[in-house]
Image 1 (cartoon, helix red, strand yellow):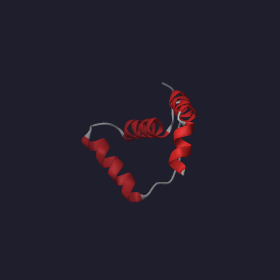
Image 2 (cartoon, rainbow, N blue to C red):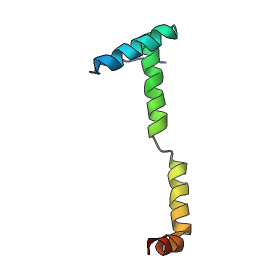
Image 3 (cartoon, one colour):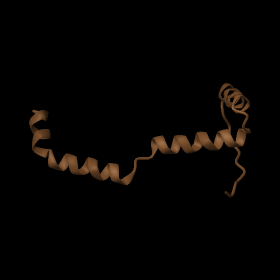
Image 4 (cartoon, rainbow, N blue to C red):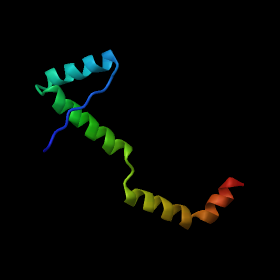
Length: 70
């Protein structure tokens, strides 16, 4: 996989914790950082099918929603 070089600022405490995790897991910092970024993206990106299901559910339960809002 192609890699790129990045530059950013992080809190010193977080950086030290990241280095510790890398050392404990016998990985390099780049590998741990890549995994952390991938995990963050997975947890924060809402998949289109989830949004579709949510929209369908709201539409199907519109009358119930109005009733509950009263």
